[in-house]
Image 1: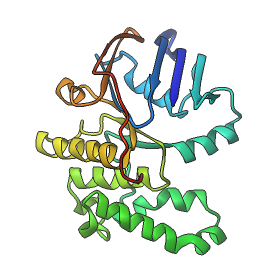
Image 2: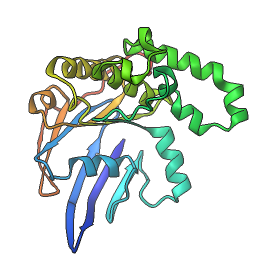
Image 3: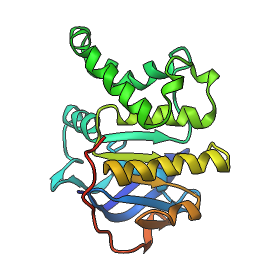
Image 4: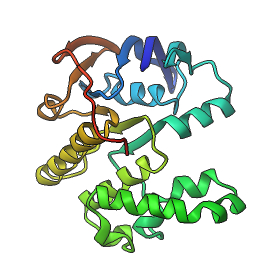
Amino acid sequence: MLTAENLTKTYRRNADIVRVLNGVSLAVRDGEFMSIVGASGSGKSTLLHVLGTLDAPDSGTISLDGKRLDNLSNRERDAVRNRTFGYVFQFYHLLPELSAIDNALMPAYISNSFLGWMQTRRQWRRRADELFERVGLSHRKTHKPREMSGGEMQRCAIARALLQRPRVLLADEPTGNLDAEKGNEILELLHDLNRRDRVTIVMVTHNLEMAGTTHRTIRLAGGRVVEEKGPTFRPRLLSAAV
């Protein structure tokens, strides 16, 4: 479904030019749970951002269902990003003054005009209610981030990422800011979303044990794919998607 060919990416750090991606190629299959591992500085997060069109490669191609994304206009890329990708990060990026449900609804607030929001707000609210039930957070809808645990905030962030029914969930160290117990709960939730709702997931993690529970593990070193582990992936016929 999602492919990358020979991606390169460099950044300027003071007077130095740092090559972060150095010819990365990979393919993500529909319904797959893939993990990306590697040492700090190996390019994991940069690769995730480039795959999700949050950043542009210096060279190489990214394609979705055979259609290139890297050469789209900014407006076209924004539309594809909003429709196709959901994002979960190590730090939850919730707005502290908003309730949990309003944080989850933020993509709908942003993507609609005032009139569009007024016409569709009931549907969006039902969607958010369904997701809060799905991620086990129905009892926290009106709570603000400061009143929630780290695990609860990450569940809220996952609900927000799924609000517009993305085809791919990109998760950058989603358990990195949690203790082992809460981290395992979030990993279990991600597996459940992948297994029952057929959400395609690409997860960056430093935790090799967690990576070992996914369908495939890609290891980066020096901005290149140096190893790929995992059984041959066979998509299953699963329940209707989230």
